[in-house]
Structure formats: C-alpha cells, structure tokens
Image (cartoon, rainbow, N blue to C red):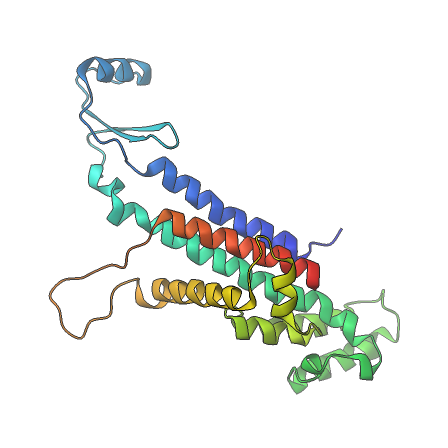
Length: 265
C-alpha cells in the first residue's frame, strides 16, 4: 500500500514529540550533592571504583536518573535552561516541518489524479502551476518510447509527478495564506471556514490563522535569527525564552490542524 501524506506527517510529528520526551529526561529539576551511601551503591552497581567521583542528573517528571563520571566534559549547568532548551527549539522547528511536508505531499499525491479529469474540471490553481519546457519534453519522450504501454519503462505520469514535486518543494507552506493557496491547487475552496467546523478542539477561523502565524513566526526566529533578540546596540547576548508547555501546545495544534485537513481534503 502506497505511503500517504498523513503517514509522513505522523512519522515526522512523532519525532517532535520524542524530542519533548528527551527534554523531560534530561532537564535537571532536582540538583543536589550525591549522598555518600547512595554514591557508593551506584558505583557498585556500575562496577566503577569507589574512588570514582560521579555526577547525577535527576528528573522528577520522568522519574529518571542520568549518572556520569566526574571526568565527563559536561557539568550540571549543561542540563539547565540555557542548554537544554535547545531541544525545545528543535521540537518546534520539527513540528512546523512536519506540517510543511504534509501540505507538499498532499498536493503531489492528488495532482496526477486531477490532471486525468476533463480540462474544465481541473482546478484553476493546478492549471496555473508552471513547469519547465524540459519537463514537457521528457513526458513526450516517455510517451513516445513506451508507445502507449504503461508497463514499459518509466511512466510519463511519474516524470510529471516528480517535476511537480520538485517545483512545489521550492515553496514554503507554513502561513495561513500559503496553505490556503496550496490547497487551492487541488481544488479545495473555503479552507479555513471548513477547517473551523471540524477542528478539535473547536476554533474560529481567525484563531486558527493567528495560531499559525504565531507558530511560523516563532519558527522563523529560531531558524533565521538563532532565537536571539534583535539589537542595534547592546553589550549582552540575549536569547528569547521558550517554554516546554508552549511547544507542546504548538505541536498539539499542528496535529489537530492536519487531522482536520484530512476531513476536508
């Protein structure tokens, strides 16, 4: 069974969720000195010499413990906010990428099917999609070589599908306007009114668009600005704050949005 756009999305968004779990495992929320008796027991279990000094990172949320030798070139500060928050930034960027990939895949998997319809039934957005003359030439050559036999060599439809895929992947689909225009290519109209009717939990059109803009803007701050505050003057480098609960909310919103798109596509 062919892989669908939703399959790619589920795989990609799961990686974002895995990053949140990794954050929970590594975030040190119980820093303290290791008691002598506890350290002795741990070293015995690990079969380390009793003279070996150790460090322990604990997470109450995940009930996890990370044990390191003191010679490890990292210390407790590496598990504090300024360091470990990079995992949250990666999770947010990954989630937006999952959405972007889903939109691209959804268009590509529907284009050839729609091009097989009568010309008057082909969506105007798809008609306006521009491909190079080389693509047209390659499709005609495949048709000529195959002589109408689809089982002979590479199918012309595959060449066309690959060209559409390459063209679309030059464009980002992250903002509300970009996504609406993308969906119009495959004939989906009134996208946001329809999404607002089926998304769970319920949201207005404006709330959906506002959330998308906020998430895309936050992603761009991380990707294009290293998440540093813009300054014309200043003697101190300042990172923007990022909170785990906000990243989790953004991932949940993206999942709800895509599942709603599956209902209206």
